[in-house]
Image 1 (tube, helix red, strand yellow):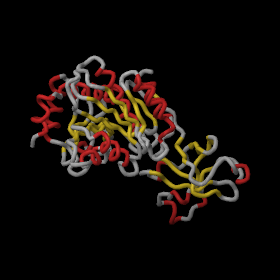
Image 2 (cartoon, helix red, strand yellow; image 1 turned 90 degrees about the vertical axis):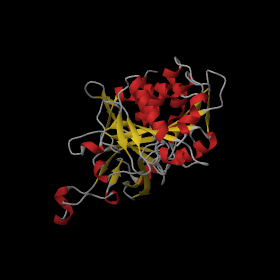
Image 3 (tube, helix red, strand yellow; image 1 turned 120 degrees about the vertical axis):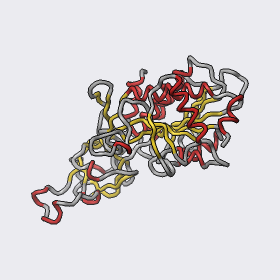
Amino acid sequence: MNTKEFLKALSDGSTVSGYEYRINDTIMYAFKKYTDETIIDDLGNIISLKKSKANVSNMKIMLAAHMDEIGLMVKYIEDNGFIRFTNIGGIDPRTILGQEVIVHGKKDLFGVIGSKPPHLQEASELNKAIKIEDMIIDLGYSKEQLEGIVDIGDVITIRRELKSLQDSRIVGKSLDDKAGIVAMFECAKELEKINHEADIYFVSTVQEEVGVRGAFTSTYRINPDIGIAIDVGFGFTPELPKYETLDMGKGPGITMGGNIHPGLREHLVNIAKDYNIPFQYEIAPGPTGTDGRAMQITREGIPTLCLSIPLRYMHTSVEVVDMTDIKNTGKLLAFFIASISNENLEGLLCY
């Protein structure tokens, strides 16, 4: 499975927070070739271990990217078969009206999201965003036909397939943060060619979108010397301030701020410069909105880094990333990991 095929399998799959297990086999199969052992913990995190090539160290470096995505959930079925639904994670209602969806019941059912036509809206309604509670999903079935197939609590995803734009850009749903998992995959492949003293834990975390839950439990279990979160950052578009965004195709954002260990961040920047790997700076004065905020404050505290892959149209079904950014993120991670040794670790972690 090549990098793009792996990303497509992840993006096209259904991994709404709390229901990520649907793509477990895909992730485990991809990492199996490049890691030594894999487990699924009690919360559902997939932890793949690549052991030290030096056999001289108990150092542990943990990489984390979340496998869950935002989605919807059935909350009521009308007598006429229309489905009322609610959100799981941070969904903007303006982005889902008119979308095609898949309701994941006893079998997957195709449907569409609809609402009152603008022709029939009151004047006071026309200038207001339609709320989720005023939308319905139309499957074309009556309530009687849905019995035994769809139940309250079934999850729903937007129906979307990963597609290529021009050059190296791709578009699809849930690239936040399937792109991060693929960057870890690229790192694992790169480490096959490089010696590293540390044991490397590649963790595909669950339930990030509803409270970074998987990162808390997996970090507690592993108790790494260094934790690195790989997520996405806001890719530049014309309506956004340049200083709040990352340029597409110019490498990952290296996060700066209180969530980030300053010594490790400086070392990461130096590695990027030494190996001519393009990178950008990302500013996060407070806790990052990533698994990194959980990693940093687990147990007695974990020295943490965060890399952000530029992504446009976050939390929509048409998220856009550049494949070169994913590959450069994986390459930077690999060279950083290879640079960490028993000899320099203590010095890097000093304040």
